[in-house]
Amino acid sequence: GENVEQHPSTLSVQEGDSAVIKCTYSDSASNYFPWYKQELGKRPQLIIDIRSNVGEKKDQRIAVTLNKTAKHFSLHITETQPEDSAVYFCAASTTGTASKLTFGTGTRLQVTL
Amino acid sequence: GAVVSQHPSRVICKSGTSVKIECRSLDFQATTMFWYRQFPKKSLMLMATSNEGSKATYEQGVEKDKFLINHASLTLSTLTVTSAHPEDSSFYICSARVVLAERYNEQFFGPGTRLTVL
Image 1 (cartoon, rainbow over the protein chains, first blue to last red):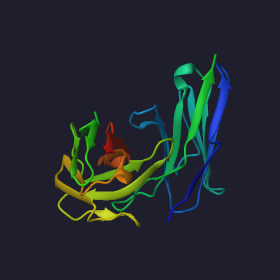
Image 2: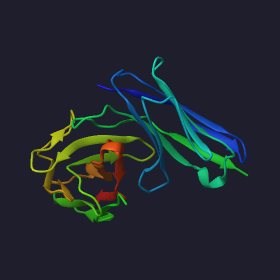
Image 3: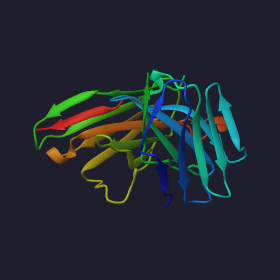
């Protein structure tokens, strides 16, 4: 089955700096890669996703890059703000009726003033 | 759009009792829902895939007789933790998969249920 590794487990940045979280996956058949933000005691919220037919996707301060050859994808947050502080999870899956998400271990991002 | 509700949000029960958790997709139909378990400061672990009108598919190591799943309609899946014990205490989260072709595979999560077994 799929295995997703995520690094770093914790990340502390100053407000205004950029944050980068990296994930690798094992199943070359995976072609859907979402990123979720989870605040303490809350539900995971989809913040951005990318499919294997593109290499990069951007939405305001958030961007995701995908390297299918190397089987890794990254989340980039620019101009970080205190409200970006949360736990971020990457995930990977194939498409199709039997597909399911495999999550990374999570990154706790702390944005300090 | 794509709102998923979960009920109850918190439940405390005595050891040996059964607890039912409901997951509803409020504004879309979901032929497939997923049940996850999350321990403190840990990732989401998929327990089972719930398919409308058919039996759930359980992940390896998850006891199907312990965690009963029923997906009776396109908007409702239930998870029943039978004969709960303290080690079943956890945060249980459901998700529903969007069926629109262009957004296929997107999962939207419920708010979670925190189960505490005394």
